Image 1 (cartoon, helix red, strand yellow):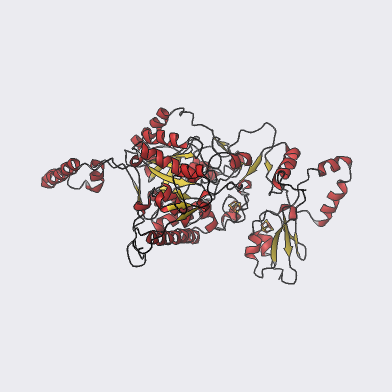
Image 2: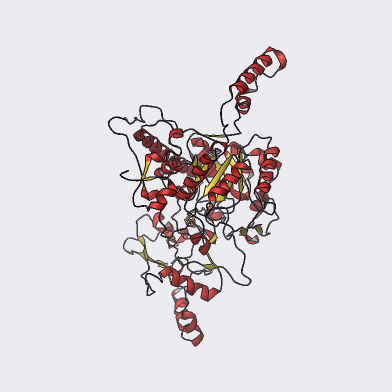
Amino acid sequence: MSAPGQEAGTVPLPAAPAVASPGEAAPVAAPAGAEDLKKKARQAQTPFRKMRAAVRPHPDFRVIVEEDRCTLCRFCVLQCSWDALGFDGRVVSFDENCVGCWRCVAVCPTYAIRIEQWPTMYRENRNWTRFHAASARRQAASGGKLLTGMGNDKEYLTVFDHLVVDACQVTNPSIDPLREPMELRTHIGSKPDRLDLGAYLEHLGERREGASGNGRAERGATDLRRALGFGPQLRLETPIMIAAMSYGAVSLNVQKACARAVAEVGSYWCTGEGGMHPDHYPLADRTIVQVASGRFAVDADYLKRAAAVEIKIGQGAKPGIGGHLPGEKVTAEIARTRMIPEGSDALSPAPHHDIYSIEDLRQLIFAIKEATRYEKPVFVKIAAVHNVAAIASGIVRAGADAVVLDGFRGSTGAAPTMIRDHVGIPIEIAIAVVDQRLRREGIRNRASLIAAGSIRCSMDVVKAIALGADAVYIGTAALVALGCTLCQQCHRGRCAWGLTTQRPDLVRRVDPEEGGHLVANLIRAWSAEIKETLGLLGINSLESLRGNRERLRAVGLDRETLEILDVKAAGR
Ligand code: SF4
Ligand code: SF4
């Protein structure tokens, strides 16, 4: 999720305002009273209004307040950031504004509110769904592109849900994870083709020599690793990291919660393209910074301060396009963090204007390595697209220490709906083809693979690793732990849960400390489940599962998909 509010990667259509997606009522300034609504209905009697009625937005939800339960405390009215509730002696609803975010339901002490889907108003059929009809009507009204937030919700096959995991029986006993140590530790970064004993002995000799007086005795484990050919690495105590969510796309409090969570569980989080706010400096050694096409915040200190650097070429939710944060969203704090003037548009071009080949990418990778004295791993993040295996191979040969693959279900703060829903490929397929290709080319050890793009539970992590990933990035799951109800309205900047907004009253709804514990709990719970799964597989280390597709079987996948995944059908 790289982009705040309207930071949807878009090439703006001249004079064509972006329009709400279906599921998103047209914004209104303030709740209309009952009188206003009557006035609107009267206006609709004119011929012009009648025509507009053809494209009039229709509520997606109905807010029902049970008056016999309601104590008139008004919590719901105060908490609704969408102007869908008002108070005139009783709680009244303005259904056309409701986005179904569920905040009111969650805060109501007497469970007096419920939200229902509005009954279908379109004459739907299998071809022209409610979504298609509503989209066409809204675009006819506005002449603008459809925008949305969060990830692709279309009914593509979710491959993870068609894979099952093996389990030990009789002759190959399983392991009890409660009584035996299970190793989830993962190292992200380049590993040597083979261990060179000569280099090791030479290093020992140098250390002995150093011990006799020339001051080199304490060069330590880092030097030994280098002597053996290891690149700079990140050490994770669990294979779950938190994906790029930039300051601007999410609030600073969300980022703080993520930083605290990874510090608690021994993992890392990524700043996204919006820079590293000074409040994160104390946990900079747990922070991966991003270098994106807009180069926001990038200078030598930014690179050196971080634990690793991620070059963002693409993201799963909107492959091939850039981003745009409108000037009115560039507050003083965001401007300082991004190192741009306050109130100016923050544009991330679709391409990096200095990268038009793998050689150009290599130059950037090595420029970053030089700037960080070869002490930080450099990741390259790409969207999972049709020829992802060839692209990943080029990236590894260009010197990246890790390749981040972002599948087409990945989330974002804002994206054109059509691009989010129809561009890219599933992460499961991308992991499998990239892992196979790198192994075939004998370069799999040179870089780690990090899978992102809708990792929803611990079993998705297990399956991603069995397909070939070293670790995963989670984004939406972390937001869900902080309250997100997947209402897909992130691009409008009014998130009632205080997540994808910069409005101070809403941002305060996330307490970084408590939020950090919630996200850490989620990661810990998943880690415990992963250990349990390793136990039933009869293996005690995550390393042994990596790319071990033999321990997966497929149910209900066609022959070609099985071939691509290199996974057998159940029963074989
Ligand atoms: S809080 Fe959310 S669910 Fe409740 S009325 Fe407002 S928009 Fe609708
Ligand atoms: S982050 Fe907020 S606005 Fe975005 S989907 Fe979640 S609840 Fe809705």
